[in-house]
Amino acid sequence: MAPNPQSTPPPAIADTTESAAIADPSVSAESPVIADSPGTAESSVIVENFGTARIGTRIVDPVLRTTLQQVLRAAAWVGNQGPREAEFVFLAGRYSEAPARIIGGTPRGIRRRPVRFEHCEAEWLWDARLPDPSAEHDAAILYFHGGAFVAGGLNSYRRYTARMARTSALPVLTVDYRQLPYNHIRDSLHDGLEAYRSLLDAGFPAGRLILAGDSAGGGLALRLALAARDLGMPLPAGISVTSPWADFDSTARLAHPNARHDAVLPTAGPDMVVRRGIAIDGKVDPRWSVVNHDFTGLPPILVQVGSEEMLLSDALEIAKRCEEAHVPLRLQIRSRTPHSMIYLGAGLLGDGRAAMADAAAFHRGVLDTPAGGTRVA
Image (tube, rainbow, N blue to C red; front, top):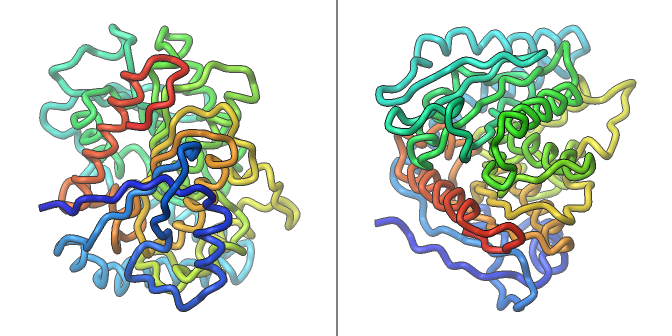
């Protein structure tokens, strides 16, 4: 039986949760860093701490530590040796998408249609029992894959986004946005804006769209919403992200206890990508990081993250911004769920399926909420 989460809206995340965890390195990584608190009626943030991880997740955790994390740690070490070495690592990440064609076929009962934008490719996936999104412009999910801006794509994410389309009963448009080393994250954002505009131009109401993504793609989805707001574009109904990479300054992440406990991401990984790929002339514009923006006016947000993830620090910063701007946020913290395991394990692990079901419920909830409402599904 799935654990029952405890939902409590904390009154002041900036003062009582993350700061306490950072100041006290003895905080156990066996449980979520955020502590439950009484909350206030004015809070816009709801935190759900899920109980013990299921057996599948507990088995996968040490496997990832001894396999994937070691590969990523080696890649970070190579990338830190110099610009040429970093370019090699980034290109290797891009080429890793090719083998995914073998396992990236369209699942049974799902329809697929490719889309071409000016600088990148995308594809629609939808349940065969539903209308073609090119014929019926009702509601849709715009999805951005993870991969630290160097890996991931349509092939490696097809089964996951197909499951999202089926579970949410919504068509999903996945964007294979431009990545490092030959394109900057500003180009990634440009591609995201182009995809969003295309949906609006096709006749999809903004209030019937959901922006979604995981890891780097989760941060990109949030950044896209901020850019759309600043450009005066209509905003989507909601934003649904998993383990979002939202801060390109690694200071807070490295100070957090989870920097030593993440089962997937090596400590030096995100910083290497930033220094060797995202920084320009050694400098990183603070505006590129989602957490450095005012969130005022954004729609309801769902953030799902594991209790031992390094990117829990980023999720906590997002919660602060939402609290300050009174943006409805549901922050779900799943015990010991490794980075992006909610994505990778959606078809295999119970915790992944539960997370997908919760995301689908959020999608239905925000689409059922009238414009101007504040419901968080």
